Image (cartoon, rainbow, N blue to C red):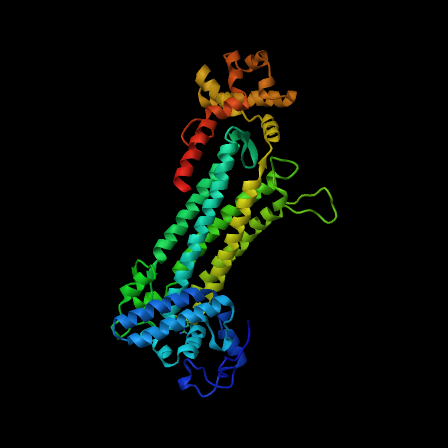
Length: 473
Ligand code: ARG
C-alpha cells in the first residue's frame, strides 16, 4: 500500500509528524516522505515489532517505570494491533514512515494516553535492530529446515543409486568412474557446511540490542537482561553504540546466503547438463520442466536454469549491503534502512530455490543404462591400469603412467576400449603384463576398489549415506 497522509489527517506534507513533529513548523515534502518511508517493506517485521514492544512494556512495569494499569492497557492494545494486522484490517500509512510508528500510532488510537509511555527508554534505533535480528533468526531457522529437506532428498538418491556407476569428471573431461550416490553425497556435505554457516550466523546475532535506546543507553532503571530473555536472546549486547549500528549480522547472513546460492547454482548447472541430449544422465519430472511453444519435442529444465540464474540476485544482495555499510560512522544512520530489502530478497530467493531444488532432486530419475554406457567411453579405467602396473608388476608410478598412456593411445588408434586390447598387444608395450590385468579394467571393479575413507566404492557410499542420515536428518 502506498497511501500518504495518516489516518489522523496529519502529515501528507501539510503539517508536522505526530511522532517527532514538536520542533517542526511544516510537514515534509512529498519526495521527502517517499524517500523516508520504509513501511512498504518493513511491515514484514510487524510480528517481531509487537513482540519486542510487549517485552519492553512488561519490563517497564516490572521496573516501576510504567504503572501496571498502563502496562495492561499497552498489552491489550498490542494484542489488538497484531490481530488487526493479521486479519488484514490494519491501515498502513506512509506518513508514519515505518512499522514502528505505524504500530505505535494505532496503539494510541486504541488505548489512548498509556500508548505514549511505551517509547520510554527506547528509540527506533534499538527497536529496529531488535526487530530485524528477531526476524532474521526466524528466517534462518526456516532455511535450516529447508536445507535439511534438500539433504534428505539427496541422501535418498544416494541410497538408491549407491551402485550406479557414472563417469566422474575433472575439467569436465571424463576422468574415473564414480558412483551416482557418491556424487549426491558431495552435495550433502556442501549443504551441511551451508547449514553450519547459517547456524554460526544465528549464534552470533542472538544478542539483544533493546535498551541501547538511540545510541547511549538510558537514564531509566531498565533491565536489559529481562527483555533479552523474554525475546529468546542469549544476552543483551554489551555496547549501546554497537547495538544500534551493527549490521554485520545481516552481512554475515548474506555472505553465507551467497555461498549457499552458489552451491545451489552448481547443482542446478549439473542438472541442466545431465538432462541435455549429449549426456541424458537423468530425467527431470514434468513437474519441474516446461515445454516450448514452437518445438513440441522440448522439455526444458527451467527450474534448474532459474536456480542457476538467481545466484546472481543473492550475490547482488550481499554487495548492495556491503556497499551501503562501508564507511558509515557510528552510530545509527538512515542509510541502514537500506538493510532490509536485500535481506528479505535473499531469504525469499533462497527459500524458493531450495523448494525447487528439493523437488527436482526428489523427482529425478537416474538413467542407469545411459550412465553405464557413458562409462564405456573415455578410458575411465586408465588409472586402474596404471595402479595395477604399480601393484602387480612393481613399476614406479611415473613409469606405469607412461606405459598406460601408450596403451590408451593404442586403443584410441584401434577405436576400442582398454579392456578390448589383447594380452599380446599389451605385452608388446610392457612385457610384465599378465592376464590378471583384465580384472581391474571393468568399471564395476574400478569403483568397488575405491574403498579409502571418503572414496566412491558402493560399500563406502552406503556407509556414508547412513552416517549422513545420523548427522544431518
Ligand atoms: N525505519 C528505520 C530503519 O529501518 C527505523 C529507525 C529509524 N530511526 C531514526 N532515528 N529515524 O532503519
